[in-house]
Image (cartoon, rainbow, N blue to C red; front, side, top):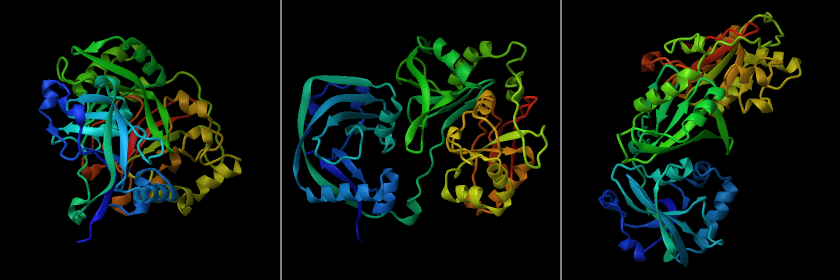
Length: 432
């Protein structure tokens, strides 16, 4: 059977003084990496086009880097180790490579030890998320040597090519929703509004939870190739092994207590989030077309598959939505205005401030439509094959979330909020 390309690497035969490094007892129990290496360019058994998409590179950039590494295959390279980092599931070193050596990793690393259950991408995730780690520094950088090689392997059987999804640990409280990473000591906490998030952030900067020190900062997500802040969410990370174990439920309870005093005093903590987010000010949404001036405007969050080209093409080209698109164009407005961050706006003349005041941070999986047009969105999504339709694992809104729905009743999208000139806000979900 023909072997497939897995990744270009800098193969390291000897770790030098890294072998003598004094690690914590728990880290020494992790399994040593049999063939330590620095990954330079990842294929994962894919062809160049799919590998380039996975690496977020253009095909020409990927091919150029692949060719450059192929031309230098077998070459010996000197590089330095900057520091070693210890996590309960992995030990790795960050390295500095020669400037003329192609590498697709912003921070190259050398994995030294790992647990048998650790994800293959755990180091990259730790670095991207900024999770607190135990750092071991050196008086001066350590010099190591490696060879440029292509790692190949047998192609996986078709049945094993789909990785089993990891389920996050989630907990919905009275005011906040917590989603904890399945294998790392970090979580994302969603608040009712950006203002409340900022107030809680100031309050919890210098505290501990369950005897464990933590780091907390505004949460960012990648959108169109760049990191953008999610205004109503915080990224929370802690060092495992301190104090009591932390799970999504304990985080939710702690943040709910911090949030409750900052919610309107006239509302009980148990109030439904839609009532909890009720606004007094007038939003003054301008209406046009056939819709009445008092009709509600709905913010919809599409779920899984929301960013797929098939879904986008349907929304922008389906005949069922032509009247909605024409209404926007006739008013001289854009379907995807710059302020909407990739969201599709089917309501003419709506302003970004009106959405902000409703407590919604728009992303490219959101739609803004009239309430009377929601059935058209249902109709368009129903045109797709069932496996390609957007799906949902939980409801995300501005405050409380409802219980996760079973597979049989899983809706295609979630109504995040509705609002109109009298600032009414509601929440519901629509199934197909």
